[in-house]
Length: 359
Image (cartoon, rainbow, N blue to C red; front, side, top):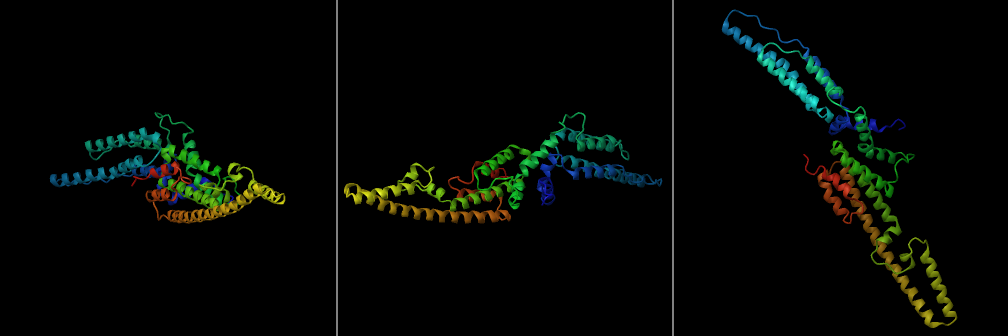
């Protein structure tokens, strides 16, 4: 996939999911608008219906002319309706004043055609307004030249971020994205989510689904990591046997050194028959063995609990990726699976809230 590009991937998704059309349009990417404008220009140049021949019968001629006037109006009104449809489609918000000018011109043309049946005013001003609307070159508007480029870059960097991560995961030689289970990736993901939440024009169910899927993948990776990391599981225990590793967790193998010293002290005390020291040391060592066995059992129970929750999370992730769960239904499930907020933070639920009441 040497020729892979995020923009091409986004366009492929747009061709499959038309919910993405509005955010592309707000970034100035809407080929269908240009096609519609070209068809509209062609329609406006079509020849009108032929005027009927008069027979001399006043009643009959009046009916024929009334039908002709109505057909003449409908002939061009269809094109005017297309013009209204065009400016009501998603497009760059800054072009809205030009869109209102198009609607005003359409209304003026209709009034002229009703006032003067069988004729129409010139369509050139309307065509010019539509072209200015599409090209964003209305002289009355001051749209920055780099605005569209900036939005397209945001489309790539923010909306396309989940797709970039998915591609990086599939490519074993791509190290542009940190491991999903790392804190670095979690920080990066939260930053992208924050940017997505701040850009209202990017909000779209499809993009939100991408981010939630990525959050589920990251949470699943962290749960699997936690289930296999003894140090993390040990840190989760509420009660631990008092050892030096509790006080000095940064020192590796400190417990082994400590118990070795205690054992040597107990042996030396026995040899020298210092019973008041040997007996407490032996009792403490035996209690420590029991304490560590209990701690190991608690760790295994905690590991099994993490593995079970990881399996439940995987089930939810799979159902969500297969569109069996909606954004509205998955929120309470995530809260239930992560009661302490270790894997899903406020950013995730803020994304879900974007679409809780949308139709």
